[in-house]
Length: 237
Ligand SMILES: Nc1ncnc2c1ncn2[C@@H]1O[C@H](COP(=O)(O)OP(=O)(O)OP(=O)(O)O)[C@@H](O)[C@H]1O
Image 1 (tube, rainbow, N blue to C red):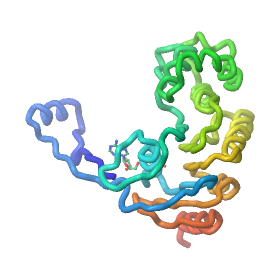
Image 2 (cartoon, protein in one colour):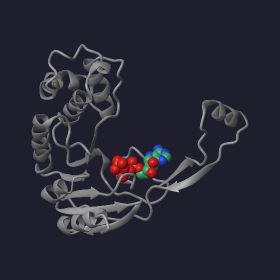
Image 3 (cartoon, rainbow, N blue to C red):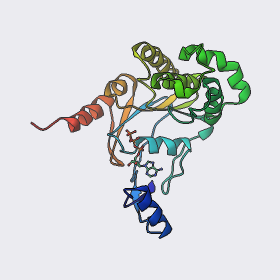
Image 4 (spheres, rainbow, N blue to C red):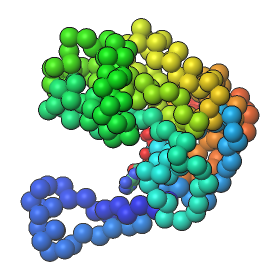
């Protein structure tokens, strides 16, 4: 997967304007994912790990169909896939209620479905009494709780893709959200889960895939792959 990145960033708005007018921008091609190949079988729970910027979210977006790869192929039945990701599709100038409809529509829910599930979403997010308030006035934990409740209200799909949806909210909400995710993971779906927590990968996954700087570094037993990944992070003595 190749992206185009601005090579020399302007240091001021004036410089940016001048460069734009003079058409002086230069770009470089950047490979976010390079020659990655793996298989996830039906019923497997695959955990994806890697340091920041290594390409995990890009890969999930390609698998779910949100991004089209510049080369290579993915074989997946997209009608069965649901990608859960937080923090996208919220407008802070709208109320909590309006954002449920906006965010739900982005995920692919119909208006009728959101009408039916609205009170379950509010209850799970514990935001009764705040839904007519603008999201601008929410704390970041409240926004994540609402995002999590919207994303997970649906019945578990056959192929579930989770992009860092754990560890949301305070300790009490986290316990509740982890229990919901565990139910989804162990409900018979095929799951791909990105997490920075190696204990989440060790405790829930049947295989682990480690991506580093856009390349496949290792795949296999979650304990072996997580052990190797943690060694990378050890500070040299
Ligand atoms: N649309 C884009 N245009 C240009 N570069 C992009 C784009 N999307 C992602 N990238 C770059 O691709 C690389 C991989 O990003 P990605 O978000 O997939 O990493 P990640 O492993 O999910 O990171 P993190 O753990 O921080 O969430 C990063 O260097 C990022 O800046």
